Length: 311
Length: 279
Image (tube, rainbow over all chains, first blue to last red; front, side, top):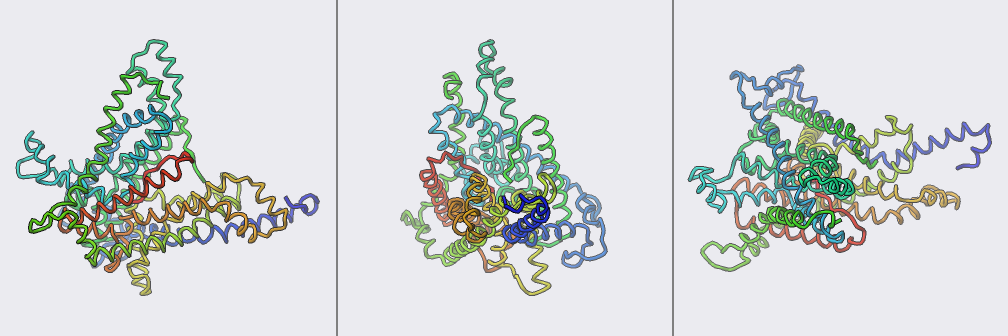
């Protein structure tokens, strides 16, 4: 590097000076952006989490003393006694998020292997057609299903005829509509990581199995499926975590703010504010989110999957 | 690759995939069809609802605000993001794997991994408290812009960082040997070689801003309705409506058009399209 470092006596000071120069340059280049994120996101989210430990004051404002009261409210206790409503909402969100992941897996597998079976020049285009709808606004995507599932739509008539729903109702709003909306919104997030795994699949394993007269099903489960597990795990995380905390789908397709945890949280900051309670719910949601991420990391490590980190 | 699967398997895959593609586009296509619904009074003028949009001051104002917000936030987000990506790739200090070296990455990834609802509510509370204490930062386009920059800058940083990582470090050595100081080297070497990443990062920041709903919704004020918020409020109030169909169709057509154009122009680079994270 510098010629000074070639003189032994000066090496120590020169290195120190160079280290300080690097640190200074790091702070004048990366500093403003990092500072921006700390001031405008990390500090605000720390405040949000802290509010979960305050008492509930007038108009839902946080006030002292510190307490665990908001968490009792999350568990369902209030001045009216205990109610299972919150636990139902949280469990419902969990079931819907996991089901969304399951449904997207079922839809994604055939598409992914259909794409990998095409000539190499065609594949990016076919993948693009899966991803394109997700580039439109989520409100627009979700709104589209209001049209398809609403009372009076063709699908609702069909559902009435087969006795799936009563005659005067549509498929909207409700759990079914939310499930459809979540699955539709997050399908590309399953297809893309799964495709990344399928694209670099080692087909010699499949050929070896075929030489040993393995059946098609056996080939899939023993030679193909295990190789797609890293992509599958990424997909599950990318679908289940945002689906769990989704706000737009429960509001437009669920028909109520207590349908999922995301809309329940938002209601505590919008309609009739209750910040400490909303903050406690948020902490609860983040615990679930982090739990999912940790399970994911442990599983990918155990499976030897390499999670490429960019920075 | 195609010869790895037997013909009947490939046929089955085709048969199972086409309904999925149909599922992806049917709802969007249906909106477009319904946007040509006859006008009230039975006048079968196709395109009535589109003409209506052009005369709606609410829609036009929301459109202008969306553009202003996206443009303003993308410029600042790109400047901050580019400097972060550049600085972190050139001047990272501390032991490899140590906390000092990992801290900047942790900070940069926070906006990316944080659920957008938690992101939005954190901002809402923060701006609300600041406004109550100081009178500054009332909810509006400014607070929305600050929030947008916060999620744009990290994405730009990642794009620029990836470009920097692909450069030959000897380039910087060479400029040093030619007695270029840090400023000259940045302006005359770094900026030109990472220009594609800066432009790409800017476009990404712009689309992230236009696409965002949740974070915008929680940081918006009474007079800062953008297009997605306009649609959401209209739908939450009156359900499905033909004028909203027309507006949604225009937005879908624009995004799909841009997506296809982008594909045509970048085809030779063999890139994999990604789903958008912003909602």
